[in-house]
Amino acid sequence: MSKSGQSYTVTEVATLLARVGSAALYAQAGFGADAASADIFARAAALPSLRRIVRLPPVAAAGTDLKGALELHTFPELPAAHPDPDKIVLLAFTSGTTGDPKGVLHSDNTLLANARAMAGAWRHDERIVLYSMSPLTHAIGTIAMAQALVSGFELVVNDLPAGRSALDWIIETGATYVMGVPTHAIDILDEARRRGHARLGAVRVFYMGGAAIPRETVRELLGMGVMPQNVYGMTENGAHQYTLPDDDVDTIIDSCGTACAGYEVRIFSQENADVAVAAGEIGEIGGRGACLMLGYFDDQTATEQAFNRAGWFMSGDLGTLDALGRLRVVGRKKDIIIRGGRNIHPARIEDLARAHPAVAKAAAFPVADARLGEKVCIAVVLRSGFALAADELLRHLAAVGLSKYDMPECYLVLEALPLTPSGKILKRALVEQVRGGELEPLPVRWRAHPSDQPSGSQK
Image (tube, rainbow, N blue to C red; front, top):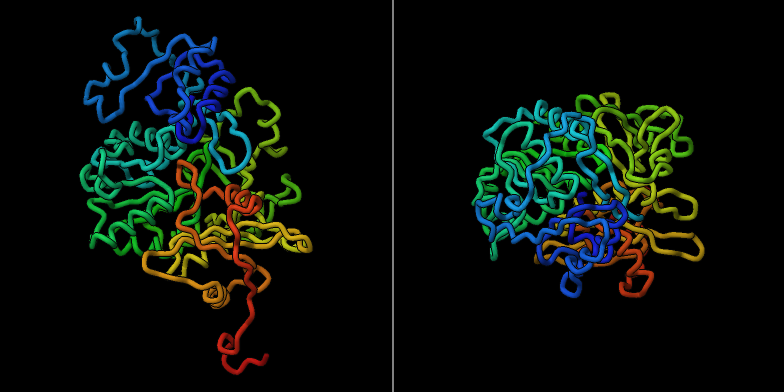
């Protein structure tokens, strides 16, 4: 069973262990989001299904004695390997930004199909040193492990020695390939800028999934000799969509590339998941192929509801496909902000906001409104040394093409955005904090100024 120990509380972990009938638990001291006040080992000891509980030392303290660290010497002789490549080898609980976690079932074949496709497309070999910035129990970490197995290269885990930063670890390990989310890249580039580094050590490729990549981040990476890899996928279907090493800058910035070998993507109507839409039209992203999960654990209803009548897995994400098969993700169906009946896609607002030189990170989310139902609130994290008034941001958004009907009407400047352990922005936390009064956005309103009008235009 795979899950991030820092995503869930000890009670939630114990609940999941009981739910799947786990027979063994391997964990380190401090496992669980509330480990300071709760003990996973004490809770696990009360579960009737568990036959073995192994307390592991921290990776840094284990040294090179992997067998000793895992206490493998205490096990009886292991049974023969199971030769069926379609057997279930991974039960991964989703750590998405909405809803309860679902148990995603994967086999050898579903995991390795994705890794083999990516290895071929990106010409991987044994000389690569891959650093996964996401937990190994996160989908990106699982994809990293599968790639290392397929191509036989070194995998560096994100277990930083005390006092070291991610950039230090990149340089020290000689990483040539980094996998993470855009937030990781933004933070590393910020540190490199502060420290005067012209390059990110030996890094040649930076894989980013889970969210849109800011345009400035792409340009900055390319300026350091690093090829960004724009990736789209889910725990359910791996990294099935990605840009290629020979793609141009516009393709990397504006799309997640094309589907990998053995997988296909189609866009379906938001109103009817059985009806495909034309190229360029926004709809729900559907997919099918070799890297797709086997289903959800012990939840036949959720499994059936995840597919349309033709057997396409419906992602819950919205996007478009162009004539070349390049995918552009515009956001989650559940993230759509409905203002007075108008559907507003947060991803576009966020992308345009991040194009402002003062903005490091941005999140657009809904706030309740008695008359319109919802309004757009934008929360930003500013780059060091910058200030940004709300009016200035709105003028910028208008100048770069945001419709006046999609303009934010609430504004927040934050020190940091709430994130999942894998680095995705946790928008529901922002919604709840505003609803509960913990955050108080500034009301704003876009009004065109004469200086904003095109030359010769009339008011």
